[in-house]
Length: 621
Image 1 (tube, rainbow, N blue to C red):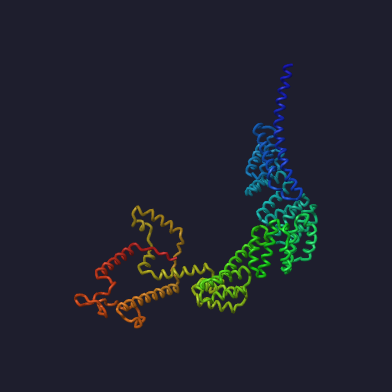
Image 2: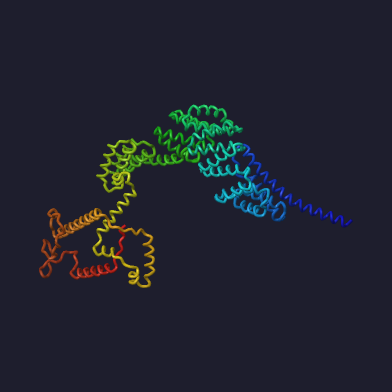
C-alpha cells in the first residue's frame, strides 16, 4: 500500500512539473495574442498597424519574458522551438530587430524542420531589411521562395517593402513594390489599403493621371466607407491639378455630404479653395478660408495649408505684411505644405524686403543703394516682379552715393533682368556698356563679358593667372635661373646635416601632395605685367624727384614728367642751406652719412650672395 502511494505521489509531482512548463508557455502565448488583437483590428479597418504602446507593448514584453523562462528552466523541452519563435516575433513587434535576429538564428540552427520556419524566414528577412542590411534580407527572401514557393508571405514581403520605402519618402521604390503586389496578388485582403498608398506615391511623384486611375479603382471596389471617402478626397485634389474642374465639382458635392461623419470639413474646404485659385478666382477663395470655423482648423495640417494658400493670395495683391504673417504661420507644420521650400524662401525674402523698406526713410545716403539692391533682388527672385526689380536696380546703380561694389552689382542686376526676364536686349546692352566701362575689373563685368562661360570661378581663375604673370615678371634674372635649375635628390641631401633630413622628407611629402603644375605665363600676360612694373618704377621715380625738388626748394609746378633724374648733389648750395665750419653746405637732413652708406652697401652684397647660395622658393600658381 505504501508503495502504491509513493508511485501516486511521484506521478503527481511529475504531472505538476509538466503543467508548469505548459502553463508558462500558455501565459506567454496569451500575452502575445492580447497584444496582437489591437494590431489585427487596425488591419481589419484598412489602417496601418500602430506602433505598440501602453498595454500592448507591455503584453509583447511579457510574452518575451515568459518564453525566456521556458528556455531557462526547461532546456531541450518540446516547447523550445515554440518559445524561440514567440520571442523572435515579440521582439520584431517591439522593433528590437537585432534581438529578434538572434532568436530566429537559434530557431533555424537548432530546429530546421520546425513548423515555424516559413513565417520565421519571412520575419527574419524583414528584420534585416529594417536594419538596412538589404542583401541579407534578400538572401532570406530567396530562401523563403525556394523552400515555400506558394507561401502567402510573398505578398506580405511586397507590402512591407513598400511601406518602408513609403515611410522613408522613397516614392518611386514604394510605388514599384505596391504596384507589383497589386499585379501579383489581385485578390489579397489589403488590396484597397495598398491601392490608396500607391495613389499617394503617384501624387508625390506628380504623376496625376496614374493617381486618378488608381483612386477611381479604390473608390469603386473597397468595402470600407472610410477608405472610399479618403480615396475621393485625394482624387478631388488630383483632378484640380489635372484642370478637370467639372469632375472636381462632382466629387466635392459628394464629399461635403460625408465630411462631418469623418470630421473632415476643413479638408474639403481646402480643396474648394484650391479649385477656386486654380480657376483664377482667388478673390472668392480668400473669404472662404478666412472664415473657416475654428473647430475645422484644429488639425494642424488644415491650419498650415490654409495659411499657405492665403499667403500666396496676399502676395499676389501686394499685401506683403499679411503675406509674411501667413507664411510664418504655415511653416509651423512644414510636412503639411504643398511646397515647403517655396514657403520658406518667400518667408525669408519678405523679411528682407520689409526690413529694407522700413530702414530706407532714415538710412544714411551711402546705405540707400544697398537697401534698394536688396529689395530689387527680392522682387526679381522671390516675388517674380522683374519690371519693378529693374527700376530699383537702375536707381541703385545711378545713385551717386553708391560704392563701387553696390553700383557694379546693381548694373549687373539691370543687365540680367532686361536680358533674361524682360527680353529687352537693347536696354540690357546699354547697362552692359556702363558696367564694362565703369567697373571693368569687377566680377560682374567678367561674367557679362564672357557670356555663358563667365562665372565667379572663372573670374577667380583669371585673377590668379594675372597674378602669376605679374610674379613671374618681377623675378630677377638670378631668381629665374635658380627656378629653372634642376637639383638631384642626392645633391640636395648632401648639402644638409643629419638634423635636417627629417625636414627634407616632410617637404618632399608636402610637395607631393600639392599641384605640381608650373607653367610660364603667356606672352600677352607677361608683357602686361612688364608694363605694370615699368609704370610702377616711373611713378616711384617721379615721387623721388618731387621729394628732392621740394627739399631743394624748387616750385612743384616747374617739375616735368621725365624719367628718373640723376641723384641730387647733396653738397650743392641752395637758398637757406646750413654751412659747415669750412664754409661748405651741410648734407641734406635725413640722408645717410658716408660711413652708413658703406655699411648698407656691404650688407646688401652679403644678402645677395646668401640669396644666390640658398634661393627662395616661389609659388607661381
